[in-house]
Image (cartoon, rainbow over all chains, first blue to last red; front, side, top):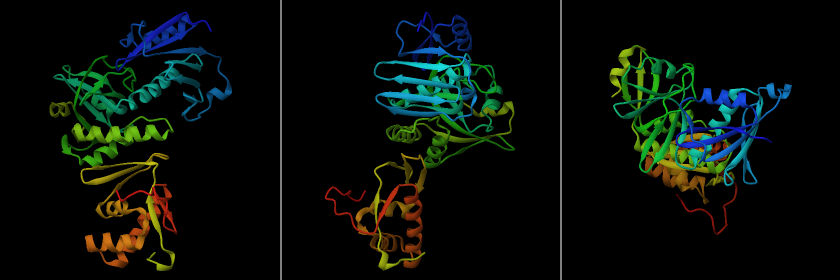
Length: 266
Length: 108
């Protein structure tokens, strides 16, 4: 396979080099991941992306399947197949020429990388204010996009959909991601120490309430993106979520919604 | 569902789980199907005593009835229900005979 066109997508400080023989697809990726295109000389790993014509099977609604066998991660969904060798730091993706399949592959690979390091991807909007990161977690419809769209001008938006959480020593950092939700806007490629995680709820007034640590862990586990049917990884993610809620305050944020809610976020 | 001395049960903790005490509650997750449970104090006490060798009836009498001052009939009924639910998800293993394996798990 000729892979003369390449672009490194650097999310959370983990650059992944994507190689393709299709110049147009390379440009599509560079445009989609604007702000996250990094230097391609020292990637964490490399993926060769093979573009194939659509088939009826690839249009199916098959759920994503992720498994580990013979030292390789195997990823499969209706619209793509992929394989990644974490030791060789190489892999491949076979998909039709669309930006959504590779986006899913990147989310899955990052979730696997993070799990080994005590981090995770969380269904949460994220933002930096006064040098600290705040996350707003909830299922679809909870208000992630709404709270992101209400952010005042001194707030730097990391994402309105998927937060990238890395463990760095005893701290947890939130990193910006290009994984956009309804705002269809990539986040800023920067990071900050997480000060608080808010579990979103909509109600008649803006208020913050404490959340017992066990409930915080339960809610977090519901919102962590996790794809692999792998016993060791399930345990790692469980442990990561428990350690996280023991170190990072988790609160319930009920909001109306109006811009005043951001007066509570300090 | 009550206690039946003719069909004694022996319970042991599955190895395919992850468990952790958080805020005074025991969180248990199955690593096979990712089912998640939060155990209250009584359930935690049963869980911790589940060594595969001690009959469930003895665990209930010794741990639940004495430590938590629960009526025996209620305690046995609740314990049966708890064990049935957790065993459905492979979190507790139930046997009708004690585990004689020398490497059997100690109480947690």
